[in-house]
Structures are given as C-alpha cells and as structure tokens.
Length: 341
Image (cartoon, rainbow, N blue to C red; front, side, top):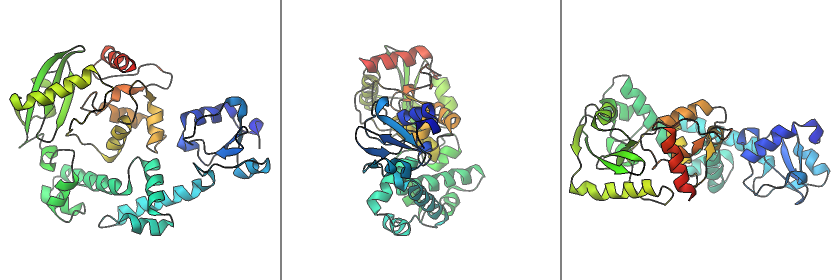
C-alpha cells in the first residue's frame, strides 16, 4: 500500500502532530534514511518529498526500509497491551504493585515499561497508582464518609502514608469542606498585566489570578482562614511577580494544587511546553494518551487555579487562534509575547 492508498494529507498531519492515536494505523517511510517509524516518533521530521505512508510495516520492509530503533514501530500492539495490563493490575490491586512486578507481568524491562507507560498516560506506574488512590479518596469524601475511612478504603495503609504521597495538594478535609482548617495567606500586587492576586498555604501557591481580590478568593476557599500575607510572604510574592514579568524562566516556586488524575496529567503536560511555544488542545490530549478527550483537556485547562506557574496560556486552538483564557485574551497575548522575547 502506497501514498495513493492511504489518506496522505491526514497521515502527514498526524505525523506532524506526533499523534499517538494513529500509531498502529500506518507507518511513515522515510526514503532519505531508509527507515520507517510510528506517526508519533520523536525524531526530527523529514521533508515531505522524502516520505511515503504504508498501512503495514511489511509493506515498508518490502521496498527495503527497516524499523526505526528509536520508536520501534512494530511494538505498537504489544506496548498497548502492556499498558492496559498494567492499568488493570493497578486498579485491581489492594496495594500498589512494584515496578519490577509489573515488568515481569508484561515481559518488559522495568525501565522500558516505565518509559512506554509514561509515554501513553503521562504518568509513571507509581504516579498513576498514587493519583488513582487519591481520586478514590476524593470520590469517597464526596459520598459523605469520614476522612479516615476514605483514606483506608482507597488502599492506603495509614493516614500518614496518604499525606506523604500528597506532596502537592491540600488535606482531604480541606477538599471536602471548602478549606476548613486551612490558613491561606494572600496579597494583591500591581504588575504589567494588571492587579495580580497571589494566595498560598504553608505548602505553596494555591491561587494565582488577575483582576481578582478577597471576594473571589473566598469563593474558592469559603471556609478557610484568609490572612493577609506578612513579611514571611514577601519573598514568595516577589518570586511570583518575577515569574509573571519574565514567564519563561525556570522557577522552583512551590505549589499547593490538586485535581483528578486526568487534570494532573494535563497540568503536568502544560509545564513541559517550552517558553515561547504553544500547543493545541488536541496536542495535549494526544500527549497524555487521550486523543479524543480534547474537550476534557479544555475543562482541565480551565480548572487550573495557578495561572502562569502552570502555563495554561500556552494552549491555543488547532487553527492557531487564541482560544479562551480565564483572565482575558489580552493578558494571554501579553504573556505569550513576553515569552517570545
């Protein structure tokens, strides 16, 4: 099967987007290098004139092409089966299986299994297990059970173990009761983008927004103890302001945010987007292994309470237009222009 028997335009677009949802549906033959790849291969893209598309690897090999040693296009089905097996095993297990145990089940080495699992889900097996348990705690709390019962029913051996794993995010009673028992320090400051609200717990920044104040913060944390940040808050505030004014530079600002496993996977992917670059909602969906979840990616983007530090402004529509932004397109455009410089 050659270009004429494959939708070449669709295949070329999928290859340019490195869309993993097309892996296994065709392979990309690169005539200039003599290899064939998955559509999602991370190698540098060839020129269009050097590319042919084949429905099956055997057809690429018939004209003398060999499999890419980077993306291993012949392992697509095996990789998918291995990832599914790991997910099913983690979901059924009472305690999180060790990576070596999961590797033995799939026949892969631990290193390779970790790599393909993270490639397809956006998380390592251990992080996936933690996110799943945390999500179960949230679901249990929403049904009205006690915090302790929710923690143990979700598979944690102890409450302390739960809190150790939650390096980011508030305690479950805070999630359940609108911030009850938590102290949230906050301040507003003038920036080149307008008035910025910064709020943080002792763990890190839990809210960064523009043109908002105490009233909006109280809507997010209606039962928290809101306290104006004092001298100890000034350094954190200064660091956040510096990050907003030069949004592309690396930072180690601690965050206190949480979401569902899906939302956290999206946020993790947002933080991988290099400064000065953008990705589409479809790109993010494909990157976390959920190519059909474009709308859900948009919702996860909107659920981000920490603007700039989790750079949801770097996500645009597939046609290159700006799309939405919680604090207005003018601020989004300004952030992108700052990064481009």
